[in-house]
Amino acid sequence: MELLFSVVIPAFNAEAYIAEAIESALNQIGVKIEVIVVDDGSTDNTLQVVESFKKRIRIIRQENMGAAAARNSAAQAAQGNVLAFLDADDIWMPQKLYIQSLKLNEGYKIVYTNRYNIGQLADLPEIQSNVVKMREGDIWEDLLFGNIITASSCVMKKECFRSLGGFRRDLPPCEDWDLWLRCAEIHSVGYCSEPLLKYRIHSGGTSRNYKMMSKMRRRVIAAAFCSHRGEKLPLLKKRQIMAQTWSTSAWDAAQAKDQLLAIRYYINALRMWPFIGTIWYDLARVIAGRI
Image 1 (cartoon, rainbow, N blue to C red):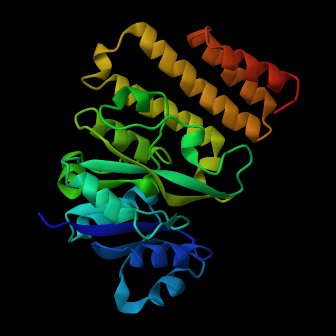
Image 2: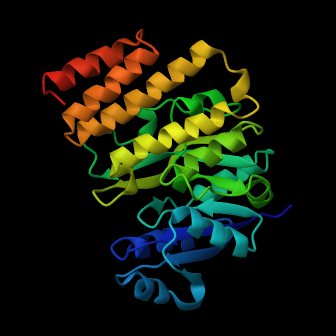
């Protein structure tokens, strides 16, 4: 079957970056695409920037309802048989979709890629795989320990997306992680080791809302534990997963200089599973004021 990629770009007050994102989608080589931008109730000049691309893209306007609703709206309007997600502040390499098309033709319903990190990196490396273990196949349990799939790196067969019900609107900003988990529970996941995405890290990113992220991480894990495979997980495995979930939230709080909350989160992690040396080490660093 010939592949047509529907590029899905949700945009809320994204005037600073969205033109570069759209250009990177339009510059894809070796594949057929359509680009759908959803203006999610922007109050800046996002719509004017988007409209400057005229007939090269499709535009959907809606009241501000969040990225999940915006992506779902674009998916509903998509004419392609593959959905390719791209956030308005990220950039694709020109060969991204072509390389992923080769993986899709192997039979995968979902394929993600490695990424470059750009912008305010702090302690992050330039290439994400230098700090995060990425692989393909049955990665459901890997995903339970943390979201290794960047939304802007991911493509998914539209039939698969619709069978899963799309993104849940009640899990911002972790709705993508939830969808990947629901997909990986039943489908093998493809992976491209080459960095094919430039992922922009900046102060306006939704991931900087560390308190909301912590709350939604726990909701995502709770939902996964209630799934068919989740109910079969051993109790000790669940405790290890929860320890990692609390530890990730603690690190975010520490990076935001919220020392007391970081300490509380690390203690919660150790209550779940006290046998992870790095958690003790990071807790000591926070108490000493070294993070």
